[in-house]
Amino acid sequence: MSNMFLAYVGNDVFVIDPSVSPDALKYDVPPVSAILITHGHYDHIKYVDEWHKEFPKAPIYMHPDDDCLLGDAGANCSYMDGINKVFDFPHEKPEGTLSFRNVEVNVIKTPGHTMGSVCYMFTDGSEICLFTGDTVFAGSVGRTDMEGGSFELLKGSIEKIGRLPSETRIYPGHGPDSTVGYEVKYNPFFS
Ligand SMILES: [Zn+2]
Figure (cartoon, rainbow, N blue to C red):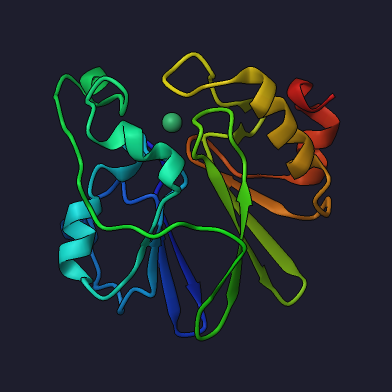
């Protein structure tokens, strides 16, 4: 099970990594502005079709470098859950700055865990939030031994994240949140 986030910024609502069914939520979610996918692993996109059905106008963003994972149950790791699930949903390439009504979202390309891994950065006033998927966890980083993984590339991506303002809040795809400053100081992969 991976973390799914619902980010509310003014009137904009974002689903980040649709790993929970919309039917499982105990409240109604207002119209979603976009579905943001950090990478193409099954546990992060498990309910993308259900969210797309519920909010068909919301664009879905996932980097095309992970397209090769979608149609292959081995590569998208659904076999780890004991099922063979393949995906075919419309999606756009996240790059540069994505503009919405109330907020701009910066896309940081962070290959390493998968070729198409990206982080989404929200800046709201003085608060900066970074959704890192499986690139960085509190105290650790994502594994690089699966399809498209590269520890060399991951190291470069971690350096990129380490240069962000230290107060940047990190929301990973698994486990608790953290900050860039804390990870730079205590995460052994940042040194
Ligand atoms: Zn993953």
